[in-house]
Every structure is written in structure tokens, then in C-alpha cells.
Length: 211
Ligand code: MN
Image (tube, rainbow, N blue to C red; front, side, top):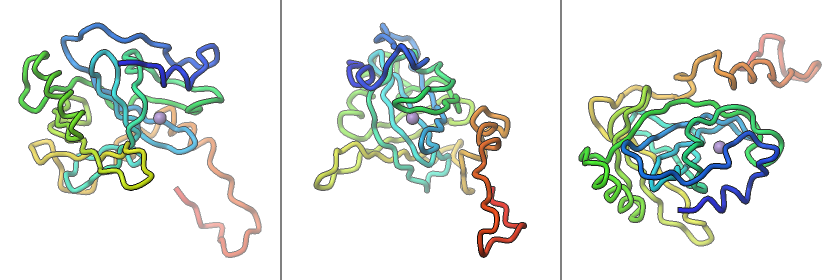
């Protein structure tokens, strides 16, 4: 596994993001979900495998409702140390704020020993049907990442993140934004940086306040 793409996109003399190395073998595999306010607010879903973090950008965030199929765009591998990264990325690639939304460890769905799990997960990743069990604070139970067949001209990096039906699944609408504390760094920033309402703009009453 290589971090060439990750490194090529970043200037480590200006970003606080970890330059990172490939990690030696782990006993437990880590996952992390980071909430990232860049040009768009999105979530970054990362699974440790082979010493790096396999990474997907999930625009709508993960869901515990099995009916939701959340688009997940695979992006470049990130270094293992990125699992702890939160803070402000200055101007440049990914500029904005990163906060940790959920974190924990994960296994394959058979809960195999580490070596077997690694084999199963790698096979799943390769075949475009990756099943795993998350042990996080918010995200728990079985999930799948299913790769979409690329249409002409597409890069083939589109996947769907889907919750499996189990005791951790919910049937009501799930919005990861509602699971984010109001005082999270990004939410504080958002409340301070609301787009100012235009004065005298026609058709808008004073009462029109958007969230
Ligand atoms: Mn991101």
C-alpha cells in the first residue's frame, strides 16, 4: 500500500495533517469517521487495512437505517495516523475543518481472527463487496460497502455504504447531522459564519430564518 497520492496532494510544511507512514501489523483494525467542512460539508469514512486507511468521502454521512444507500466516493489511501487527525487544514487541498465524528474498531462479519479478517476484507475490497462489523460509539453492527459498476467515462470510484439489518439498525429516518453535538468545532464555526441575509431582497420577510 502506498501513500503516493496522499502525499502528492499536500504540502506538509503548511498543513497540520500527518505526513504519515504505513503502519506495521495491527492486532485490532481501526475505523474512523471524520466530519469535514471543506468547500462542502461531508463525512470521510476510513477503514484500516494493510497499514493505511482505505478512505471514502460520504456526502450525506453514514446511516443506521438499512433503507439508506449512501453514496461513498473512494479517495486516496490515508496514513494510519490520520485516524486521530482533527483540526484546521489551511488553504490548499481539503482546506477547512476536520472533526472526529465516530471511531472504534471493526472486524469482518464472521468476527474472524485478525489474520483471517484481513484476508476476507481484502477480498471484499477487491471484489467490490466489502462487508464488515463496526464497533464504534455511534456506528455499530454490520455494514457493507458495495462498488457501483462504472458507466462510460466514470472513474469507478463510486460505492454505496449500506447498513445491514441487525439489532443496531434503525427504522426511523437517520440523519448523521442530528447525531453531531451542537458545540462541535464545525457547528460552532457554521453558526458564526452564517451567510448574512441580504437586506432589501424582494420576497423575503424578516421572519424567514433558515437553519
Ligand atoms: Mn474530506
